[in-house]
Picture (cartoon, rainbow, N blue to C red):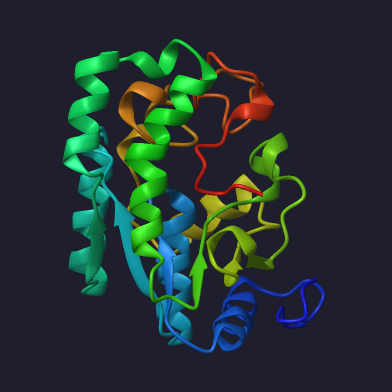
Length: 231
């Protein structure tokens, strides 16, 4: 681990990881919220533990209606103040006029270009002024996430602390926790979705596929990241 990264108990709980990361950041920390089961669980965990955690969200312009419903439910239940970030409208206009509406399906480079405009650039603005950020990433989600650490130094975003409190949770644990606490849940999960992003880039998952198989399903598994979590 980096010298700034704190130590915490083996088999630490998500609340313990969150607290250690927030203490190490020694400044404002926010959750990057996509309104997934993971992010909803983290909001509840932080609320229960009395931890000071901001919440920001990136509206790519292509989210499902069901995702906005979860956002609204969280605002109502926890009185959240969600900081919304949007892509630069001129960049989106240029992309769609020049490349069309579905260029991201033509090649990996074009998909990365779309994600850079709709996700990565807004994230860079969302992280300004923060000392740390929290994600809902879990190791079992796919091959791109098996080497994650619970708390990392994010060298690609100015060396701020990056906290992954659910890193070792299984999908079964996650579902059990959200059921137990009756947390808001995106209706798409009941339709076979297991990882939910932009509507044109997400589908339900077939039996035996991993959780992120429904993301950019036309690509190889090792490419299934949007650039928000570059390593």
